[in-house]
Image 1 (cartoon, one colour):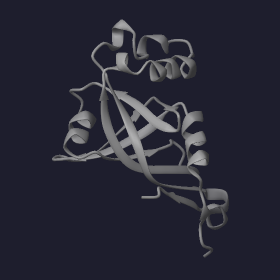
Image 2 (cartoon, rainbow, N blue to C red; image 1 turned 180 degrees about the vertical axis):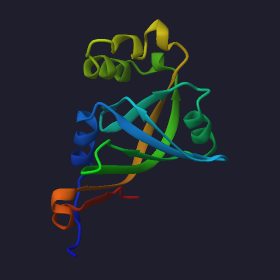
Image 3 (cartoon, rainbow, N blue to C red; image 1 turned 90 degrees about the vertical axis):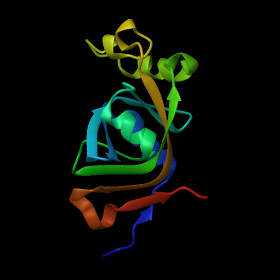
Length: 150
C-alpha cells in the first residue's frame, strides 16, 4: 500500500463547488443522521442551508462536528469540519448570489435562499478540518488527504 499524497483544500473545494448535491452527516441523541443538501463555496468556505427545526440543525446546535461528502462511491471526497449557524440568508448576500448562480436548472428557483418559499431557513458555514479523496479505479494510487493547519 502506498502513502496518500497531499490533497489541497483548493482541490477539495473545487470538487464540492462542482457537485450539485452534497451529503451532510451529523450525530444527535437518536444517533447518526445523513441528508442530501445543496451547497456552495464562497471564498473557499462551504455553505449550506437548513430549516432551523430540522434534525440536522438540532444536531449541529448540540454538536457542530459535521461530515460532508459527495454522492459517488467510486470517485470519493469526504470533508470533516465544524458547522457554524450563520443565521438568516439576508445577512449573507454573496452566499445567496452563489446559490442563484449555481442552481439554475428548471424547477430550482423555488428552492433558492431569498425566495418566499424558503423564508425562515438558516445558513451554515463549514470550517473544514480534514478531507480525503480517492478514485476506486485506482484506489491505492489515488488516495489523497488534507488537514487544516492549527
